[in-house]
Image 1: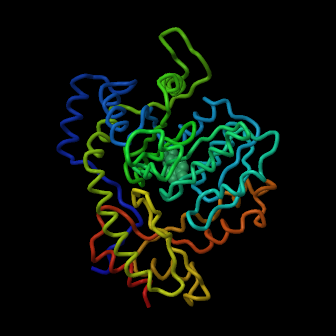
Image 2 (image 1 turned 30 degrees about the horizontal axis):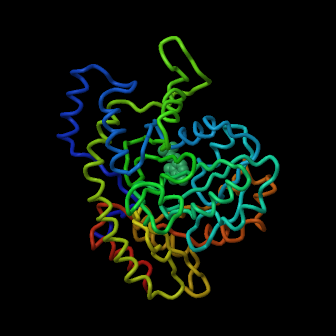
Image 3 (image 1 turned 180 degrees about the vertical axis):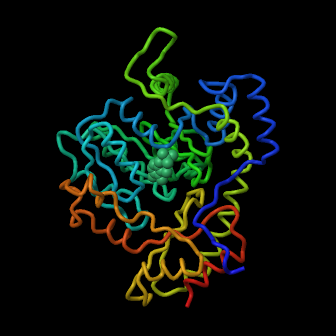
Length: 382
Ligand SMILES: *Cc1c(COP(=O)(O)O)cnc(C)c1O
């Protein structure tokens, strides 16, 4: 029994019988992509579920980032975080934009808004923060800086599916309706990933969230080569459409995502309860006024206090078939494409380096049993 591998994540899969029914409908209609009925239904259902005014589906979570930068005609330099999945910075590179890395806040893992102003130059046009692990960024402070310097804000919200903030806690979000407001309503645009490893998946997939119908129209053109109609191409668009099969799959998964998040929460609560007493192991405090999605459970290993390095613990877990992941190690700023940039110097990013060198994301998904969680805990508690 101890031999079973406990993986860091497990894809949320729809009921196969129900999916077959939907496939049959697609086969009957013989309409398999290009804004079909399931695509339209999923956009509507997601906007409602997430509490956002407009959403456009994409074929993955990287292309909406690339397209958002195109749509807002971002150029020059963009301020961003090195503590993320590499796609965040790649999206800038694919647009010929120079990434400028700014250090992160140890309390959340997010871009430290207090360090943003010092990185602004005459070439800066936007800020690209990430709600890392689903922890909401300080969207008010970021917006104030953006307004002061005339910058755009695009959030990589790949981890923030379903994350909501008490509207009394945020000047910006309190403009949207409701007591708890989706963090996806912050900034000019936000992007989501529906990759298999995320809280909500469509196998591969993603989306962009925007504030108004005109922007949705423009994004819908851009994700379909720039076609506005049969004979008009309004700009250099790309092909990033979601098909009917994955839209149908998404509709089914949306029905069970709340249950999946509740199961994640149960595991997270158990981790917190036990690991709070382990000397040298820390994790993020629960953020007040945040309805979280429990997308990840990162712990940080203080080698001196814990008596074992992060990698020693990581490989000890491996030996016991408990597969954590070192998200996000190495930092994006350490990869060959980016490490030559001035802002990639380790001196500029001390907190990001400390976090990258000490983090392990523990297994966190909807299928973890209490016994699984116990096995993970037993690797860590000595
Ligand atoms: C997963 C992820 C992406 C990319 O999403 P894909 O759907 O895999 O293209 C982008 N940014 C972050 C922070 C991610 O975790």
